[in-house]
Image 1: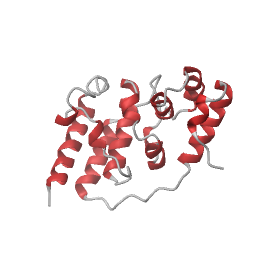
Image 2: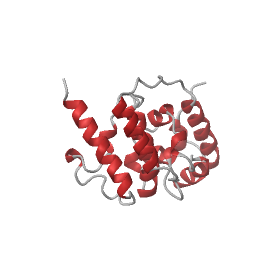
Image 3: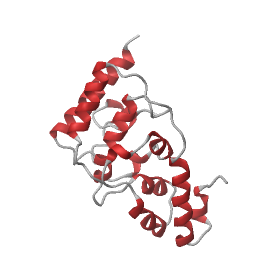
Length: 178
């Protein structure tokens, strides 16, 4: 049976929360393409991102599933019921299926969630596993995004910002090459 998030509008929060978690389990279990072969530069960038964001946890930030619910204007009771089930300890556990299901998460999270989710988006992008969307669309320091993500990126430290800048520079070079 194909589940949907539309139940959040038609059910009591307790019933909706259980259904929502089942929906996310279903979507997160979907297969995803394997990573593309990586260039030496892409491998080095992934290593830099991994080192810069090593040990970053979600803490009490807004997680992946909750961002999807916020985007849908879900009742706060449903968001609160789903929040404890979020991945909180290791951003490396965010799979391509999870990112594709909640593709707009970086728009609806807070600074702690942004710092936690961002390295997953960057590394999945480098591996060619984000599907039809682009990690550059969610980054500060990209001229097209000027003023949009700066407030979410306030918790990034110098090493993390350097990794983001190197990612942006790499992607801009790659996008401009024939």
